Length: 228
Image 1 (cartoon, rainbow, N blue to C red):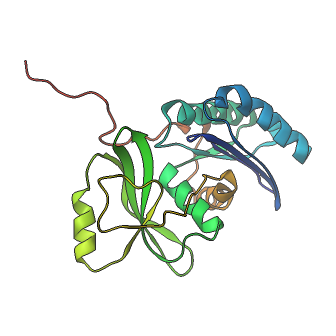
Image 2 (spheres, rainbow, N blue to C red; image 1 turned 90 degrees about the vertical axis):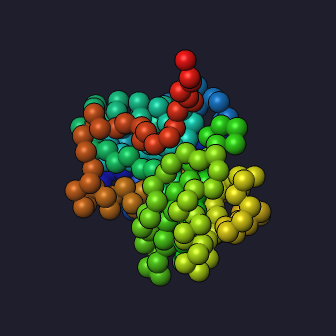
Image 3 (cartoon, helix red, strand yellow; image 1 turned 90 degrees about the horizontal axis):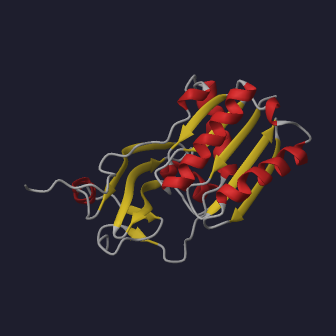
């Protein structure tokens, strides 16, 4: 029996899941910017529901970003603390993958090629590209990177004749080549993280508590060079 905790706090929602063997317990609330006030009481309630203690935790998956600067670091900090106390292994998960797996769990994603979109600031968005096969397996073709205009690889994929589906908020500058469903709103769910966290651990891809770190995305910096 593997006691698995999953934490996702990179958006306006705080999503927590605790799996004790096959039994699932979850807390999912829209907190806006109150994650730091509510996440620990929510975790306490989760462990009480499962009738276990944090020290019983064996494995932790957490949303490592990209996403809210503060939210990602809240998840990483809590993961480090519980993992250190319980000697748990940790699995950092990309926000784009959690978004896609949450949509799959909700029955909103089928097979095909998907562009995931995670908002950053102003007109800047994190984009990644995934394939989903008939066995509901994901493979990343382009990892998360920050963009303020359509990336070159988007045109290359479009020219290949593949249909591209968009998941997440549609950037104003991404109006061609990607099909977005305006009625499709997906909340990142910690329940969608449990299976992949356990799978990655089984495949030897988990690590110790000090590796519970945010994912730093190429191009993600507000600083710009200026001419002197």
